[in-house]
Image 1: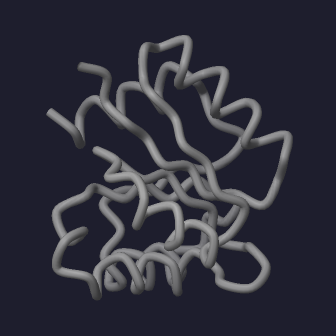
Image 2: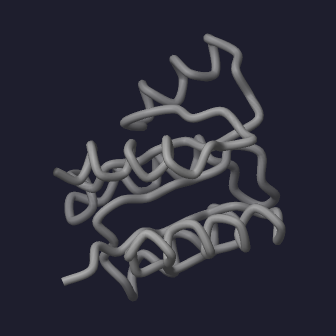
Length: 121
């Protein structure tokens, strides 16, 4: 059975890159454009892992992560942050919100896949 990945990013280019990378690696991928849509998609689809951006309209990655972690049903789902941000303070904030890991864009597809496999093992 394929592992399912929810990607949350406001950039169409990044969403397309993630879709191609993840599907080529054998994952099932569902996508959302921001944190609000991400929480909506989460209700309809239980992913094995979430990959989210931080800087997004309506609800940013921090708010999205907090929203995911507030629901007991989703507490165990690993969340990887994929962002252009590399500031330690933001990494700490994401970790405190409940993020599992942090990957800086542009991403190396093989490293992203390895990170997803590691957190879903």
